[in-house]
Length: 129
Image 1: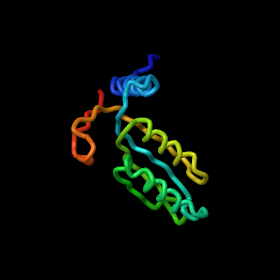
Image 2: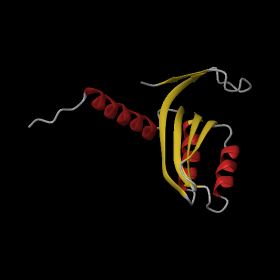
Image 3: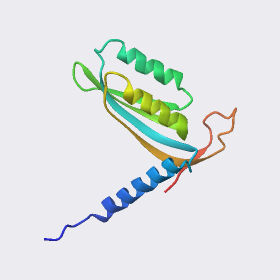
């Protein structure tokens, strides 16, 4: 019996490996990404620490979506944009925080235009394909 591989799945696997290669080689200096994690909001001061971390990294934190899963657990997705190293460092800090579970960061290398100082986030980000 032959194994049938969906061409879209193959494409996604190749694209994912190309992104990893670009990030590992340091070829991309800018990017966007989504940091997602689950945490227990009852755990001592964890929600406050996570919010404080986002404020401390306001230069790469674009938006956060928060949802309650049950009486104790929440899921958050944080959109990050900025220098690849800064975004990755922030994502790793959040995922490593005691009490954070199921954390993952999905970076997308990109080229940025018009993101000069003083212009804020007004500019264009072109994801590499």
